[in-house]
Image (cartoon, rainbow, N blue to C red; front, side):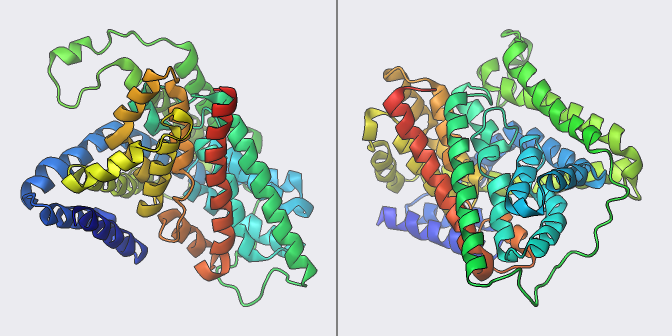
Length: 465
């Protein structure tokens, strides 16, 4: 019965999220429902457990959410993101429209631009190219998903996306953890996803299906005359990658830098520099990227200028961080319940390969699917079980870098379920329904999930990191 209460709570959270209700409001509701069912007093469970864990998450990751959103908004409002997308699409050509959209998303997201901005930058060009080439519009969302939120989100080493940052605080790694495994996994996803989408294009062409008719949200004529120089537009993205690499792999932080703050007995202090260094590196690199983007695209900013772009990005980040923080609070309430012990033991009891990797992969991808959030599902799992997985890895001499890469890649698999916020937004922007476009998105999701577990198999067979 204890496990049943947890399962009912999870189902209700997933159902309400799918129906469009805010998890900020309903995550604590269903967490407390589960707590009450197992004899915990609801008010302490809310204020002392749920809220405390949510605050810890906000303390750790709010700068990344905020600066990432600001950087994306500046890249969008200055036209820099659109200039890069247009150049790539133009260079690759309409005869390879699917590949050009994939590559445009790859460059932008690997440079630190959020998928939401990428969709706005790419969609008008993608729609025009697909229409001219006679490729079904319903394939655009899956193509954008492949280029924007698969291998550049969590597989390729050094990606500044949040899904590659979260594991650093739990495992003491940096964003370049397990680079060879990440590259192998990323290439598998790219090749598998591209092959699938090209196969779908050829199948549609063979049966005479074209772009489609009676569609909505079709882009109007695209004005590209005033776009910034694409070479200058690339500089902020390159700055983020280069500075992040230097701060992560070349610069050495003084291990005693925290000592004065430890003496102050501040709440929520990290235990060591290595658990926060990756976040410091990304903060510095994204700030430099924002400054460069503003300097390069200043004249292209619409009415309101810099202040409007910075404010919009900052405000936009609040919803994202609060959504994930609420999911983390929910997960920690569930983890405190007696019924969760049997679930945790079952997950930790997955000893396939004699390592924690399969246990970690299954747990994270399952929670990501339930929450409809890669960062949310991974944060819940790592907050609850990272210490056990790390202890297990240490006992067999496994590098925590492998734990990092598997956690990151597993989070970006089944997170893209129908109730995922990015999927809902993407379909709305493209003017398509779940019925029209989600089957192909789900195929990309399956390929991504298979790749995450293939990486585990490759490591177990070869020892590659």
